Length: 213
Length: 191
Image 1 (cartoon, each protein chain N blue to C red):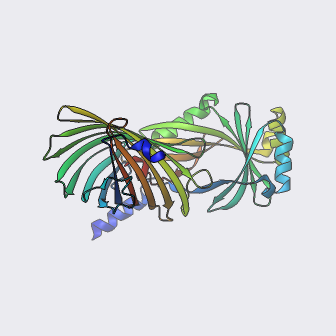
Image 2 (image 1 turned 120 degrees about the vertical axis):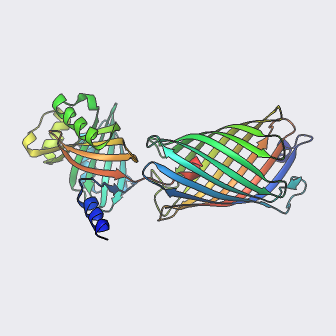
Image 3 (image 1 turned 30 degrees about the vertical axis):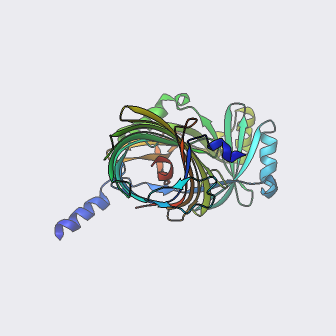
């Protein structure tokens, strides 16, 4: 059965709801101020045979500054403050990214990010690479009033207290592009910490909204 | 108050080229929906090419476009909604242009941006359909009956402005028009 593939002895499967709201403010033709709010919600277990638990509630507030290097490449720096039942924390991040419309229907994006998280525990340093692809439901690109689907895959290398922990994330976004250019999405996200070993897997189900000015 | 009015007038009449934004929606369309005369023209002219039909919707109305791949060459032919021939375009390399023309184009782009990259160049033909057909078939035509332009996609950077632009130049390399290609929200992929 597929369920058993995730459940090595000592592994845990957690489930969570998530709501994200993201805002982008154009400062000028090259610079944008990004801000986002993400809330993780504990979810009642529907299948206690599969899910061993849920997450603690937490709220993440992120602010970043993105600068375009070219129509395809940009870099960003920023920070995040976390309010959590499990303990508050702060994070700094730096990233470089690129997005291109391929000759077919796919919009392809790459993101390379470094982040440093500080909390009551030892500082955590992560090196992350994410690749994403967005496909319109019809036509060659997603036009206002149309839907799209996006697939994202991310590999993380985490270092904390002298320990190395890999993490793998895969996500699917079912989105709608509004006529004003804003986006609404249904998210399905799977995060596997230490895949293949005694792993912790988190299933995230949520909604996201992206708006800009 | 006078300073504000003066500053506003200065901004309004300054020579800053404010590019209009280009918004086009392109969608594949079944060949059954394409007007017959458009299909006949393209099939006769490019019998050996791979043809894909597109419907293009913009603020100027709907058009049918045949995208043809002939070996390594990419050609597109546009027709009005009723199937009347409008124009044909052929992708070319910027380096193949005459020096006199490319120098003029570079001069215009250097004036508009402090850094730029020409991403795509297309030679655009409109006018007499028979002469354009003869040009693609034989390489020769009565050029007095054909109106030629160069269309380019340019990535440009100027101080705090950066983006993708579509430029139109005459066959002599004189600047005619500039449109900014619309940008879409990609925060779900990048952030």
